[in-house]
Structure formats: structure tokens, C-alpha cells
Image (cartoon, rainbow, N blue to C red):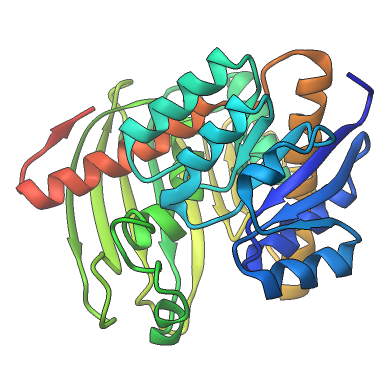
Length: 341
């Protein structure tokens, strides 16, 4: 293999631009092709970014110049598209969630193992400066014993948002609502910092939107395997939209991350927060740049992992953890009882 990973994008929806722009900033990565069933949008993106356009997926996969595919289609299509790509010998990256069922996710993981290709899933917030800093001091023991962790996503989605795509708000293609779509990033961070979950008890409701099959509010109490407790909230009814928050409380220190920045940083040791420029800002434009910076960092990690023949930070198994937790939350809400993982 050369020292450049050549990439083809699968999907031409609004998120495709974010991925394309981020990949363009990655050393040792080169965008070469894009596939979508939508002739108009795929041609537009191909012209904008000088890519070869495909409207036939199998033809796209026969392009020997593609080393890795990036799948940014509706959630319920990720696994099958990824399995086909793996069988064609391509490395696979999917947008979050990895898919909408554990069964399909396992099939994707297995297909990538059999084909000896790398599988990763986009959880770019693991690469936010604030999260990298928390993980570092956690590994250094500054928190002491972790006792409580919470992930809260209190945002707003209009009815127009759900009406904008036939797949949105469906069990089959969206996999669920506020929890699996909007809240999964901070649920992933909760697991990344607090460790695995033992049991959940949850409620979900559809309160503020019409014509959707799924929840627009979900809440869960969580018991971690460590014995720590926690809370999860996923909410797309919080007009006009507020924040994503991660609370990590330990015996020797606590941190609150809000909107991807450190809001509170308190340690018995007196350890101060050095990334001052990263403290919470209300500047929306800087937030967008920040997100893309984290995308670039994750893509850099994935590309380097392939070139160095190592695992990326977010493997298929890592991506499956947040899906398993969310599936347990949905099961608990349906059955009205605690669910063990």
C-alpha cells in the first residue's frame, strides 16, 4: 500500500460536506470518489470537490483506486453498505450510530475481520480537547473513585427537521429518536470515561412532534459495573435548544463539560485547567470550527491506524457499546423494568 489512503464517500446528504471538508485536511488521505443514488446531489458534490461520481454502488466498489469508504447514509443502512465494502476489500468508516441493531452491527464487525480491513465509527467528540484532557487526568488518578456520571442532551428539533427526510424518526432507518440520533455522542463519552454499564431503568415519550415513530424525550438511571450511578437524558423538545453536558464526579475531583468545553474543573490536588482558550464560549462559529477540528483528528487517527497496521481509537466493538446501552434503554422503557447489559 502507498502512504496515501484513497477514500470514497457513500451518501450525499447534508453531513457529507462536513466529512469531505475534514478529510481534505488530513495528511496521507485523498478523496477520489463519491456514491449516491441521488444523481443530482452526487454530481453536485463530485463537481464541487473534483471527485468521480457513481450512482451504482457495486460499480463504485469495483474502483481499485478506493482504499477506504466513508458511509454517511441513514443509520439503518450502515451495516449492509459496510459489509459490501469489506467484501470488496475496502476499509470501512461509518457515521454514528454504527447501525440500528446489534445483529447487523455484529455482522459488520465480523465481515471486516474476515476481510482483514479496518472498521471505525465517527465519534469525533472523543477527540475534543476537553475530553482528551479529562481522559488524561482520569488515567493519572486525579478523580479518585468515580461515583457519578451523567450525559444530558437538551436540544431542539423542529417538526420540519423530522419532515425533511422520510427516514427521520423511523425505527427502521433512524433506529430510534433523541437517544440514538442526537444523544449518542455524549452517551459514548459517558461510557468512555465512566466505563461499562451494569443496568438501566428508563422512560421514553413522544411529546412535541407528530408523524414520528420514536421518542423525542428519553431518560434513564444507570448503574455502572464499578458501582457508580448515573443519569442519561436525550431531549429534542427543549425549545429553543440548550446544551450537551457531561458530568463526571469523583471522590477527589469533578469535571463538567458543556457544549464540548470545560465548564467546571475542580480537584482536591489543586490541579488547574490549562487549556484556558478551550473554556466554555458562547461563540457559535468557534463551536463549528471546533467540531471540524475533532473530525480531522479522528480521521487522522483512522488513516494513521491503517498505515501503521494498528487499531483506531474507535473500533467497531467500541462503537457497539453505546448502541448496546441505547438498545437496553429502549427495552427498559418498553417493558417497564430494569434491564441488565
